[in-house]
Amino acid sequence: FFVGFYTFEILLKLVGLKCDFWRGEDWKWNVFDLVLVLFAWYDLFADKFFSDTRLNQTWLRGLRLLKMFKMLRVIRVMRYFRELRNIIAAILGSFTTLIWAILAISLMMLVFGLALVNGISTYLADTHPARIPEALMEDIRWHWGSVPASVLTLYKATSGGSDWEPLAAPLVEAGAMYYAVFLAYIALSTIAVLNV
Image (cartoon, rainbow, N blue to C red):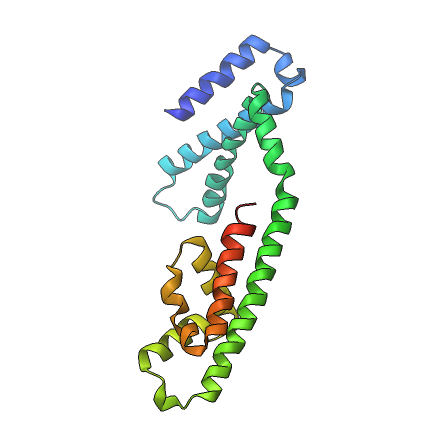
């Protein structure tokens, strides 16, 4: 159905625009549309007549991937919507600021994660293993067993991935100071950093 519709559109353009189809202001878009329609017809033809033979399947997959470039037609329409262009330009213009903000938040999570892993490792070194309950040890391994795990735990605590109170249970056992550091991280990240 869509191939027929786009073929009809191309034929109307060829008849209506005549030589301006190739030389007009939008000639690049016209050629792009024509190439997409030709590839679509080739794909239909190959599916119909070569479906039983061992035609180069990689070529056909690549051709189908090329058909996804039809989505670029949306760019053509955008020039008529000034407000949409302004919004997209603002989003693209804020990418560098977004990257710096992500870097700052990641650095903050890393610093707090290092401090909390240090506290947990001190607690494990000072406490006899027989005195640590197995459930607590499993929580420590899962949430605070390494720096990447602690950074992920801090991310989950501030992004809503996990409730932060169960995540802090091993820190309560490690000492009130580490629990306070965790609470300071929660307060700093949710109030100061993410709401600014």
